[in-house]
Length: 238
Image (cartoon, rainbow, N blue to C red; front, side, top):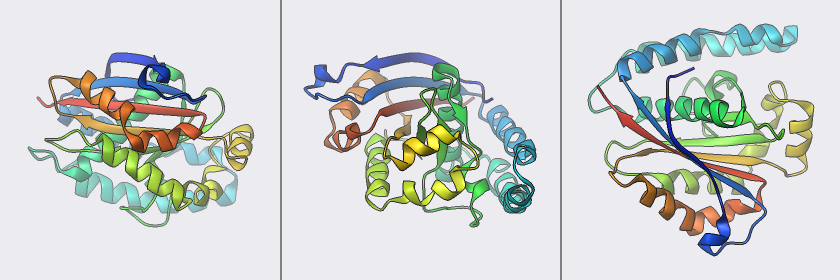
């Protein structure tokens, strides 16, 4: 697991923002540092393909073959090439891994292998960046956005809303069924899902960013679902 520091972890009362909803909304503020160490941890995590051994023989061979190509490209072309400032591509992987770690630590989510390891295209998959299974047996579809200067929560929320409209979550069911419980899969088929918007934070006033995100009209579209997680990742490069 990538080392993260949980700065705050709050369940939000959306009525304080004038929004009545049955959706459970959570905000997590995360801090990470020592980027080179984090990159090595990401390499170790992504290179561990023991998860394929838990699959049936056909699925195991299929996903192992797909993962090999992706792992090689991610390690050689992205994770071993750390620049200052960070590239958007590396930054978004860092946000994704940090978000999954936060969800595991704070809410006991079960992680699903990185989305790009499960698909045929090596990188740049036009779908959700990461997935977890919640402790309430829902599939949580996650989107990560990175910027070295802004706070791209709007981009993350808008991308989720766009993907829902295009049914990209539904299009991933065939793959996800191999990595989540049958109950979570049944819930997803019935339209019961969770979503995670993870984004970098570049401000001395992170609470203001979370407040703006919670007030946004784009977020309102996601309150029709069971759970919503906002994860702000503060990167302290050293």
